[in-house]
Image (cartoon, rainbow, N blue to C red; front, side):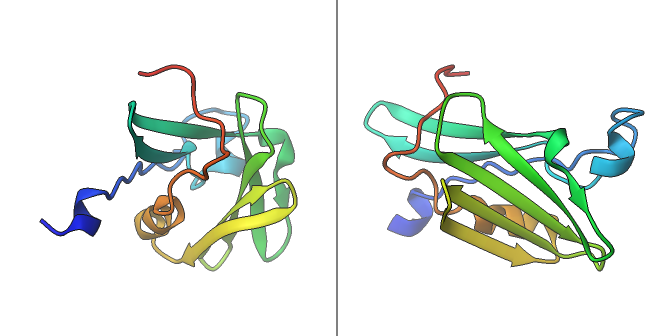
Length: 130
């Protein structure tokens, strides 16, 4: 096994289903349920999970944009852009600085590319170890 394959960690989310919630699902369907960035550290595998904030949804004639935030205090946040033509763009920020991004038309592929970079050294990790 190649060294790069041995260290690869992908945490691929499911898209929100249209039946999930009567109020929010019609507007949020297709967005990821959550987004996890993970890394192997000397203490084991750690992750930082970002959860959608439905109050941040912005929609126009071209796209829908939704912000994802961690539960712990952090400067990091993620923005997911879904174009009405079927494209995705995932952008991870530290405050106003763009840390990484990925784009494409296939949900699974874009999520793999978006989370491939893993955790930043100063990115807070989830405290629960489930």
